[in-house]
Length: 322
Figure 1 (cartoon, one colour):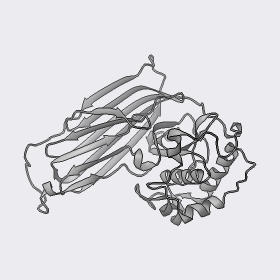
Figure 2 (cartoon, rainbow, N blue to C red):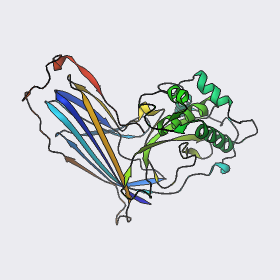
Figure 3 (cartoon, rainbow, N blue to C red):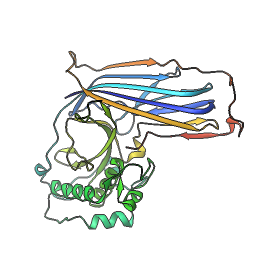
Figure 4 (cartoon, rainbow, N blue to C red):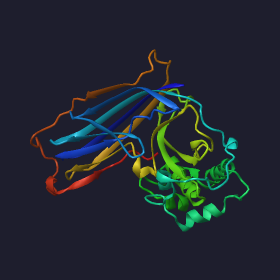
């Protein structure tokens, strides 16, 4: 399957800010499961965009604006070819816990950030029908079934910075919550697990409207990292596109940053996906462009008379919750 994915972000401020710094994880990974043919990125106001890979191999871009502005726009577009190469769970016959958990994989057994080793999580873990005779694939399926049963999909009961306890208390949440709860149970079981931030293409949505999506990968000593989507209670398929992986959501949001000023911030984000013909050439191509938005060396007009803007530095609102 070849997908054309557009992801637009707009930050609007109710007063001018003097400085901002933005970090983006919007370029999908290239791996055995998917190949990026084109990644296009445009940002405005005009800024120099730098790129690096973080400790999990995710492509990260960042830019800063050091003059007065009240709008930031980011437009990303990706052409990516995906494949159905997921290892079926019944095929994973190794015992629990997996052998030879060494090096960096140990990081994916730790509890930190929004994934807390709480009483509520331990209670849900005990309620899963697990026993020592079950293989790794069987245990993952049982854990996925239990999370899907325990947490109903319901937007707006948690936020992007909620912990798993918030969703467990509500018995509801979105894909971000379900993924992090499943990760917590897998880690309690001694299975390394990581958070996947990506896109889900839904062919039935003719408008192309889509959202960022989140699911789980667990580690198998025989097959490596294998995916599972607790929201759909299934394994990822060709319509799942991986952007970034980490220990939890806090490490891989599509965007985050800080700005200097007393202004309030409003974030809007849209994602559109569509299936397209395979490109003639499959080599990687990157395009960077500028979005013409105004910047000022001095504030042209003040609309806010509160605390002086140079005394406040705020964390930029993150991507709408997945």
